[in-house]
Image (spheres, rainbow, N blue to C red):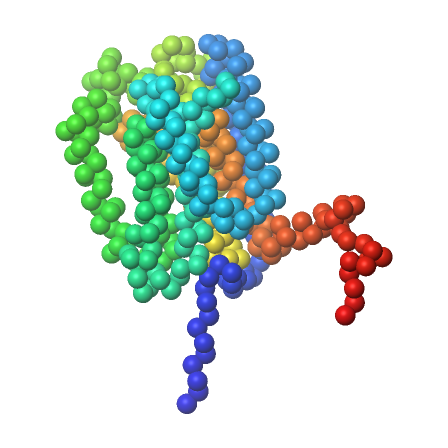
Length: 408
């Protein structure tokens, strides 16, 4: 009788089976579409905000884009593995920022933002990136526990870290991001191998409970959640914004009324530069362009998932999946809201809507996906890059003549 081969550890320290081909073609396509969507967002922001705000919003968004590109370059240089290792510290900092936001001056009745030195930061946006990194790090070394003790060793301890962060986002009156973060958490668990019988109770029970509490204890928010069912009826009150969004989409037709020629952005459609910017895209550039934006989002997410499937490590697979899927979910919710397919809830269009925190989070997420793709072609490239830099620095290596390196 032949002896059974030993079970291979599936911790993140061990690479998964190498892919047949590295994800370099996917990397090029991913970066290209991320750049095109971001550039398109800057152009549309100029159109939607110039009449009322001049170039101030455009300049601020451009500044945040530069910050995001620098942060993304740093993330790529560090590599997703090191970022995942730092994720517990990031979670602690994120929790502190969310608590800080609760004591800041509310904006539109919500306490989501921190204002420092003229800049406004929304920590909940960064939570999408941090939770993805944390879950990728947490799950990558616990593969066997998903089979032996999935609730006790996986869902319960990870929930102790992620749950309070999601609760703090909810306390900041950010229901849309709360739903997105909870969905992201459950999806990453599922992709990691968690059985559905542990996930479905949360996915099935939490939405009805949330709706019950909102209906019974928050009449204003309940009105906002249900107005999408009959926007015309409430067009002069709680459905004013959604009704004007539908008018903008309908008046644009296939080709639009012309770039910068929107009429609904002139004090008719609130938040036209943030959550409802795609409504102005439909009005000015038409349904054909709006459909092109939707296809661009689909391609970006699809290519990101392809990179996830080609990841060299389990940690990389979960990182690329989480980053890609949150961009896709956010785009889906935003498009559903502006078209009255979903309840009205603040959710910016990724890389297009005005908002530095949202743009920064999306660019950092894109950088993490890019890091996974590069690692699939050049394993552990950050260490090799660091070694290459050290060799070329005057103080990066010890002198053999100085006797610091002696032969044995």
